[in-house]
Length: 259
Image (tube, rainbow, N blue to C red; front, side, top):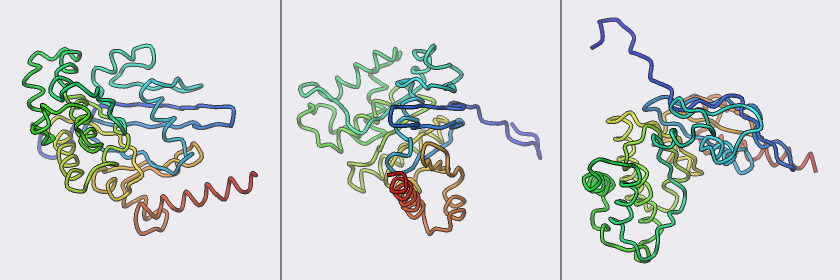
């Protein structure tokens, strides 16, 4: 309980990336990026193609090792302690490789067992209910639409109540009503469990609805970091889409000048 007038306790850091650098033969993809994320925070990592989003995301997952800098998830340094870090992480890719002949419930139960959940059946039931896919429990992979696969993938990533979820284009293939369901469920995870979200997306409207903070990348560097409103004001645009288009135009001009 807070003493009257006392400041709330700072939220713990769940992701800390410091001085990330990654170079490929074609040039430097990520150039000295610092990025932190706190418990319960909802962050959108944005930018046009070639800005460095994917490489940054892969380094934050421990899938790509930086040439310089470091990444810690929940205090665990990557890649040395990646196994420990992954226990508190849920990852959602754009497409779920659900086996064609495996039922959704069986698939989720497999992951619940892999996560070592004490009551795997209850965890699966809770995930199905949270994302409104109870009716898909007995469906097999070939019977699911791309949007339904995405829902199952998000439910799988949330099974073990992770402290950090990294979502790559989570609502790209969803109808508006399903996207609303996913957004509502994710916001509830943040509010109820303190789950932090790191989201990449090209849908700026969806980002404005889901994220309280955005980081725009440009040419491998951070071009802006703040609330959606602050970033829009800084660039003198009407919305996040305007900022995105401005940075895409800058990228194209720089490429043309270098050609």
